[in-house]
Image 1 (cartoon, one colour):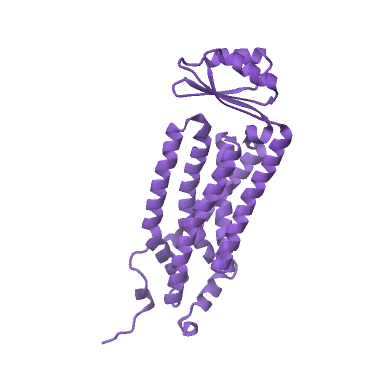
Image 2 (cartoon, rainbow, N blue to C red):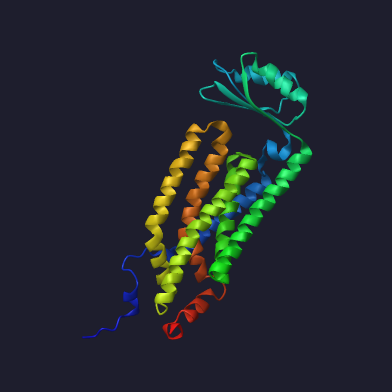
Length: 306
């Protein structure tokens, strides 16, 4: 009886052939990045109060607010650039404008009427807004770089490069989501970017850890097969985690009101994107990075393992 196990028998019989479609996934990702770059170059981001300076006032009333009347009153006071958003069937309103002086806040109170109850009132000067924008960009870049270093130390340099490119890919496309949709980009948006970066790397680490385990056991098996098996074996966990997280972000979109809508929408898009990138981009990148395929197979051969 021949007890010798063939390489093909050493991995799971169930495998999604993800590696076969890597160039399709890479092409779609590249197209989305080009669209993002073009949108940012032509239109840019709609920067919010935190980054431009200005006034933001949220109010409620037992009666519905008349947007046209509020806009007319603010226009007469010289604030034609005011952004007015209603929620809670018109009984809650959010007013934003570029002016951060006390006169702007007084104008908003008058325009809302005596029955309006002020819920929150914020004013940001131009110097503070510039500092916040710089800090937000540095925080995002630092987070992505720290993630890459972490993966490099935990796994290997090529894994770190793949994780860095995948996480950067997700963060850039979330920026593109803000640019394409015209949603306001503010400090909560920076929080959304950091959340997406953390979520994306979490799924990527799970796949990489399973791949490393397979490499140590089955070094003679072709790397594409090991990648497919690692992704397939973690797919259920990935989809269940994403589904439960998406339920929360979608609920925030529906019930969170205008203040949280942009954050929830970007988070929802980012979670879905991070899930797809961890499956179709992160591990398959190991097959196309310079020298990655030969070095992985050489390190994982059974002769050297012994």
